[in-house]
Image (tube, rainbow, N blue to C red; front, side):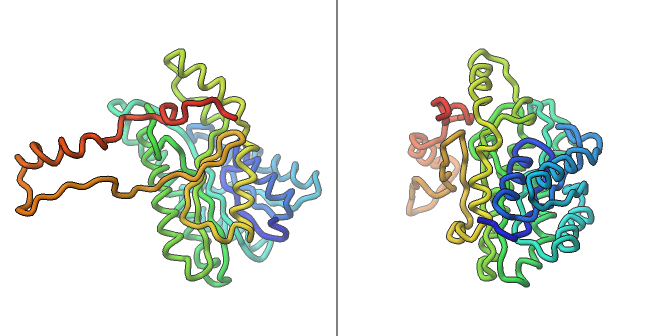
Length: 301
């Protein structure tokens, strides 16, 4: 489905990124496997993970090259795209998958913990996308696939930094889709449910949370790859500005914010009438403080 396309996959040294890179190569793509080889929290640098995935792709008869630049730095992000151009002469798709976690309850979260996660997830998605954008514009084709999360779309404990970045990525993707539609450039998001080292760090303080994590182990990273490949291919040409979720064998189209209810006073509002009329009238439609597990209450199928 992506025969001879050049695809960049960030954070592809393991987990979801690795399986997407492998799937892209199986479907005929030439893959830039980007991974800094850092720990889950972002420390360290190791060329090994990216090169091992490249070796795996080549051993199966595919084409791939390794890159270890950081998505969190604009100059380095440009080098990732340059690597695709220098190696294969073009770039057709970018899969923004790289990420780290610094989980902590909000009242304990440091500025550094917030900043580090925002830089890799949100700034990283922007930097790599921006580096590819002019090339996509010039060739009048291209596809972005960004990894978001139900932690941002719905909510979760102890992940204010991660949730803020992931919801920001949804808005970034929609803006790219709007701005670049006239150049035949698409941009979509996937919220993946998959057992990986990042999911493995989710707090499990209650028995219910522990049981849910055990169920999540059924959801392998390979289950995410087919949708990513399809969205990067010409078969996905009609999908742009959308948010999908993948949960084991389920694929969801996620909602986007729209007005759900309104109240009106012809004479305008005062703080008192807002408190006495507007808030009580709207309260029946207020959203509960749901977490992802409160919305996805059934076992993965």
